[in-house]
Image (cartoon, rainbow, N blue to C red):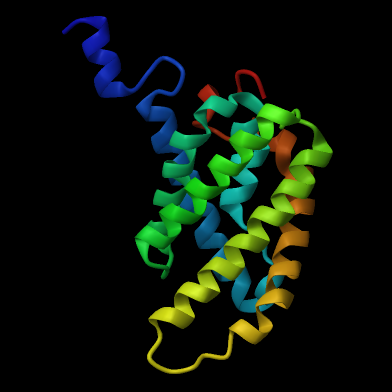
Length: 181
């Protein structure tokens, strides 16, 4: 098999399939832990997907955001209760908005990642609440509390993302992402 054929199977040299698999696994672990912590802390639990995307991938290779968003979404789909298409749509929207933002501002700046992390995770909270309300046959009453949940999750995601960003480059199995982090 030629080198081009191997790259088509394993991914490109920029983002190999193995790096995406590890990102997906760590994403699933993060979302599993967030689910356990959410039972005690409620909306004060950060969104691990946003932390991974902005803390590691956006710092190392912004062009890999699209594939990384798929990997993070796969991790959330594996352990979450949200509809898979809603999860995929949410994380692809984050990748698209952040990729567009990186054209105008340096996406690696701490302030950009802090504000982006807060806004992206808050938007995801509102999006998933709206999806749950739309799919429910009874009124859950979550839409009234969505702004409060969004603010809480946005703040914790921004703070945890800023604090953990340097440590994410040391996570085993994510060598491909830490090359320029």
